[in-house]
Structure formats: structure tokens, C-alpha cells
Image (cartoon, rainbow, N blue to C red; front, side):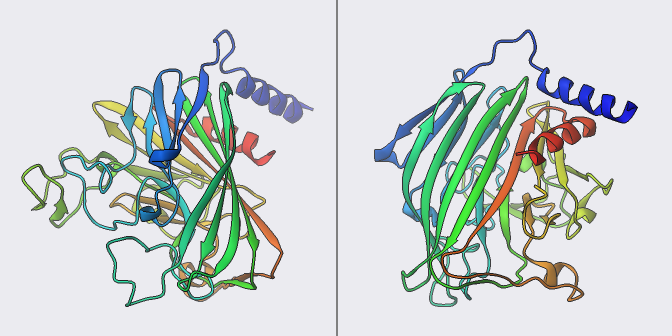
Amino acid sequence: MIKNLLFTFSIFLLADTTFGQSLPDIKIVQHPASKKADVFIGKELFTSLLYADSLKKAVLYPVNAPGNIAVTRGWPIAPKSGDQIDHPHQVGVWFNYGDVNGADYWNNSTKIDTNQKAYGTIIFNKIVSAKNGKGKAELVTRSVWNNPGGKAMLEEITTYTFSVNGKERIIDRKTELKALQNISFKDNKEGLFAIRVARELEYPSEKPVKVYANEGVKSVLDNSKLSGKYESSTGIIGEEVFGTRSKWLKLSGIINNKAVSVAILDHPANIGYPGFWMARGYGLFAINPLGAEFYTNGKENLNFSLEKDKKVVFKHRLVVGNTLENFRLEQLFNSFERQ
């Protein structure tokens, strides 16, 4: 009885955190000629969906915390002084995988030699629908995963739900993949839902790194502004979270003298739940439910497959805020798992 009352009370708190406040308008503004759609919370840009062919997949970029604080790395789209210039395929927030029928969709970019390896491309097809609203907006898109020969392998229907609760900004991504051929997602290190974070959210490095500067690329060893700290729902702290499994993972730090937190929440309905965290100190923050063989050193394997015309759905939640307390992430997880 007491447990039920506490659960009901926690749900009431979750639903009532904006009590007495008017929810801001969330508006999606499409720019077809520029191949993007902007998402505004009130007058502030929250994020933009970019779908230029050169990106090799659609991305959300930038992603801003309240106060127009970008939590995503600027390079290579809009480089900021001090940005690391590694991994040009890691742009904003994205969804793809390292081995689909032998093709690498993760590492594809305009900076690599496609003759050295088979790379797949996710071709953005169209915006299916866009709905604005008070405190919530929804964007539905269609894309096709093409193999290196241009043959369609997967149809992707993605629903982005953008919402706000106080100072928390939330992106829920529901990704439905339909097999257009028999598909193999061979266990692979690289995937699936990811964000490349701002330099300030990185961990201090022991060796010089190449960064963007107004006078050109230079190698530096400067940890003065780096403040990243990972913490998982199981209590693991620091870079040791890499390869572990948990229902959520939080990355916290300081940007422009303000506390900033980014969290990714897994969903119990996902294949391979809870997924493995491909979380690196250099700024890559990703969850991969399909890489069991790599992350367990061969003790487990999944090698997920999808027969032609069959579908699979993945759900992920990205939360951006100032200080995201663990109890609050538990509330957000509980609400997300009921979706």
C-alpha cells in the first residue's frame, strides 16, 4: 500500500513539475531549400534537424541547453576555437550502425576514402509531418539506408518528440526500421544512438590533441576548461562506464560558468536492453545494444537479424538541462518506459 502511494506521489510530482507555469510554445520551422528544420522553444533555438546529403545521415545539430548553451561540438559544421577535429562523422545527435550486411554506416563521411571499405549511406527522403504545440512538438521523417551500391536495405521512419519541463529539454526518438532485404546487424562496437558533446564536457587528456583555432589547426594540451563527468544508473563514475550496461547514463560539466548535464535513457522494449555504453572521454557519448560480442569479449553474442518486410523499433530519450539529479532521471526513466 505504502509502495503504491509513493509511486503515485512520484508520478504526481513528475507530471506537476510545471504546475503554475505556462508551457512555452515549441515550434518547428522548415527550410527545405537549406535542407533543415529548426525547433524553437519560445524564441530560443533548441535544435535543428539537418539532412544535407553530405552528412551521410540526418542529424540534430546544434543541441542547446537553456540560455543558448550548445552541448554539441561545433566542428565540422560550425567550428569553435578549441574544438577537437577528430572523427568527422560524429556530428550532433544521430542514429546509425557499424555493420549492416557488411557495410559501415557509422564511419561514413566526406573525409574518408570509400575505396578502402564498404560504407553505407542513410538517404533522407522527406519530412512526413510536423506538429507544433504547448510544451511539445513532433516531427516525423522518412529515410532509406542504402548499401555501397545504392541498393535500399532499410526503410527508416523516425518520430522526434521535443518537449520541455521547467529547465529540462527532452528529445524522444522512436526509430522504426523495416527490412527491405534480409538484414544482418552483426555484433559491432560502433552504434547506435549517439551525441558528440562540446569540448567543455570532455575529460582531461594526457596527450596533446589537435584542435581548431582561428589561425589554423594546432596541437595542444590544455585541460583548463574540461569538466566532463559520467555517472550511470548503477553508480559507476568516470570513463569506467565504457562497455558497461545500465538504463541511463549522465554526463555533467560546466559550460560558460554554468552547470550543464546531458543524459541518455534506454528503453526496456529495445533489443539488447540495457544497452552497452560507448562513452568516451574525448566527447563521444553513445548507447549500443547490438555489440554484445565486442563489449563482453566474446562471452555473449547477439548478431541481430531482420527478415525482409519485418520491422524493429528502437526508443531513446535525450535529456538536456542544468543539474540533473539522479532521482529526477529515475522519474524521467519511469515516464519514458511507459511509452
